[in-house]
Image (cartoon, rainbow over all chains, first blue to last red; front, top):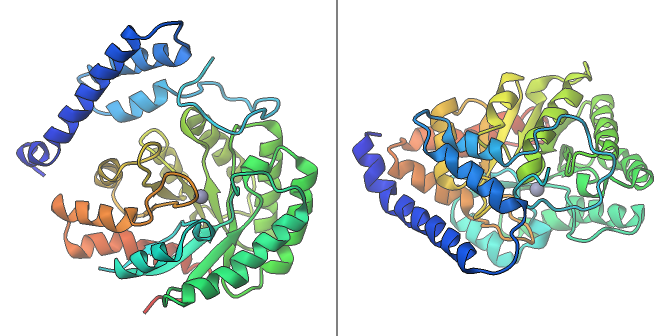
Length: 86
Length: 268
Ligand SMILES: [Zn+2]
């Protein structure tokens, strides 16, 4: 695809998602109480978007990931929350 | 258009979904054993589930002219209880000769715990002893990267397993390369929020080529879209893929991998 074609197909969708991100951060600002580790992980991942290098999607996914390499002792929950609590 | 749904949990879906899938060109559906959304209390519950997967569900699909195949295992979400897992694994051999069983799956990891790894090793051993294909579930979200690495190591450490007979599912941008580099097949799951969107799955195809990749909806009892594969095929066409190139990914690739099991018949 040409860049023009990518823009024709995906610009409005990406624009919409970008505004959603901005609105999400505003919503978090307006809310009360303490945020948990997910907000810091989100802001850290956002930083990766400004990179000039390709591979941003993988970078965002990696930044949300558990970076350790040994199995945990025991699974006490079944679900995942989208960011590594540390 | 024709396509294969290589990963659908049809026991959780309605007959309307079967009708929609067949109408959209689905030529065969494959159903890995998975977690029911609640923990089964005994191995007997799995015995009944395996009967459902090998007897009842193929009959239900046949009413829509759709060949239905399955994979058997205890899902990693229920692998923390090693005794239960061992009891379930002991049940599986009696089902392996059934005509629609393709192999062992979807095994893998969920929270990357020691017991999950132990049960994964037992499943891999079972597959090796019975010369079965393997379908692997990789963990969700923040656990996927680490889990994929652990899974790849477990498989590599069993020299009886030929990499091309293993499909590692639910890959995303940060895991796909390591899976393909090891010689395995990779599956991309098209989910509305987690895993891959259609656009990202096609990006991955653009970057890594479509040689050993397939796409699935992994439709189940959660938020999922049974028609995700044909919708993604449509998006591929919008992005300039030829009909033949789309067919290679959504039909011929699953056929190539699954035909390694002689029980899988080329859909008409
Ligand atoms: Zn599944």
